[in-house]
Every structure is written in C-alpha cells, then in structure tokens.
Image (cartoon, rainbow, N blue to C red; front, top):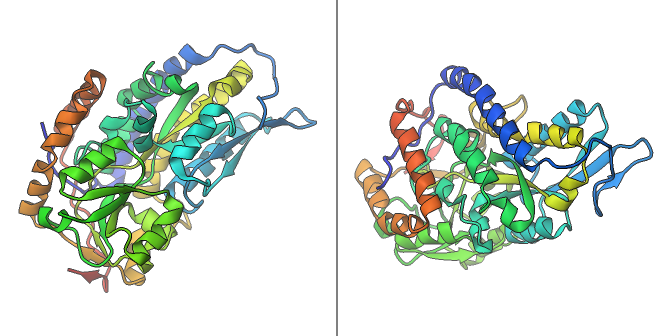
Length: 387
C-alpha cells in the first residue's frame, strides 16, 4: 500500500510540545535497548586500537561521517560530541571526521572492521551489506515530513531497527541512535524533474543502495551509484542528469553551481544515518562510558530534527541560501505527485518481500495515518526563481 503525499511541517511550537512528551518515553526505550548490549565492567579502560586514552584517563573515540560540518549531519554530530564531553565530565571525547573519504559504503566497512571506532552511516547503504532493517525509512513517499520523521527515527520503530539481530549487530556494530540529514528531493541538472515522464531515461545519482535504486528505477530512471565526493564533477560533465538530495547537501557541496533545478514540493524519502560503534570498541568501555554514549545517541533524533524546525543560532537557512545563489525551485502538480507515488508500487512489492521490512513499513504507515495533517510549508522568500 502506497503512503499519502505531503511535504510540509507543523508549526514549531506544536511540534516541540508534542515531541517533548515523547522524548522521555523514547529515551526510556533506548535505555532498555542499550541495556541489552551493555556487557562491560565498570572500570575505565582504553578503547581498542585507533582510539586513545590520554594521560588524564580521557578516552577519545573517532566518529566518521561523509558530509561537511555545516551539513545537518555535522551539526547533529557536533551536538553529540559536546554532550558526551559534558556528561562524562571531560573524561570522554569524540573526535569528528567529516568528509569521510570514500563515501558511506567505505565508512560502513571501516567502522565494521574497526578502522574507525564510530560512524554515522546513511541508512540507505546498509542493504548493500545484507542489513535490510533500515529500508522502510526510505520507502518512497512514506516519510515525507519532519514531525513524522522524528516520531519514527527517535521512537519505537527506530529503536527496534537499531536493536534487531538483523540490524547493526550483523556487522559487529552496536546501534546508538538515528539522526536526520534532510528530506530528499529531485534535483535536475538541466531541467526540472516534476513528472513521471521527466524521469524516464535520466541517469540519477544516488548512494550505493538497493532501496534507493529500486525507487529511482520505478520512476523510469537509471540509478548511478557515486560517492558524494564525485557528484559535483558528474553533474558538471553530464555523467548524471540529476540526483536525489536534500537542500543541505546541495548548499554545502555547492551542487547549485552545476544543477539548475530542485523540485521543492516532492519529498522522495528522508535521509537518516545510523550512529554506530564497533562492538569490540564498545565492549572495552566501562558501564558508565557506555551509558554516556548511548544516552547522547538517544538524543540524536530530536537534535537533528531541530536543525530543520528550530535551527540553532548561526545555522544556514538553506532555502534562503539557495534562493540567493540562483537555484530554481520547481513545483509538481498534485496530479503529478500522485502519479509519481503510484509509479512506486513495484518498489513496495520488492521491499515487503522481507517480513521484517514489511512490518516496519506497516508501523510507519499506521503512524502516518494517525498523525494530524502537517501544515503547509512557508512560502519561498521573495526573489526566488520558480517554475
């Protein structure tokens, strides 16, 4: 069953009131899930190779992610590192490694193998390593607004995905939380992507991902898997005709210089990342240290969604930024949005062949049906180019 279409958000005040009531329950559930994996003793020990313990006994863990620090991923990871330092009384430090070389697929291999201790890895790429539990998060046109997104990635569904034996544990990893990078929209290099016909025959960049490849193929386009570092040149030289991207990615990587159009009222899927730690590293932490990173990980969903609904002081307004840089905002008609969603029926058949994924899709559909309708998004700033 295909989800309904909406791309807007509720007002900030209403959302935060509702979210604040849910956070306590969410964190309680996260603590229960975390307790299932915590098995170290209570002594402060050195994390495994690659991490370090200073003369003062401070444990340092590195966390990789593929975007710039200014991207929503980077902002959420920064909040995580500060919380870990504060909650540990300065006895733990998290060293962020942005712009991780090689992209998400390599990052997942590296954290699984212990080359880096922690990583925030896009949920889209996990299925290339045999982990399908996150696929429901990026089922086409299912999660299309931030309040729903927050309730899913920070609530029981997200916790169940992280703690499933078919989840990070399959790759020798412990799940700590899920953060959001931003709802993905169609981006066209030379023409807008607003109708099913506009996708036919196009080459669309996406991360290496079975779920995203299925979604793009159902629209009649060909998915092209490229690391994020190769996308600018691919758009510039015509290797790809477009991509699926959130506004933060377009802005921070300057894709607006080589792509002219973004379809503002079509949200294909969100772009969460699962924050994980190598299990061997995790097992060498004390019980208190484990608690610190698990608690901070449980706050990632709220902190990352707030980047969009209640941006921190000094954060970039990506719509205003991209308007000022000349990006053209396209709009699909209601009929075309319905047609785009209908084209994804084969994708749902493929995803629901996995019973666990089918169950998560059903839970998200039920949550979406029960949620109040989101408010209309704010109008574009004056002077934005529109078609």
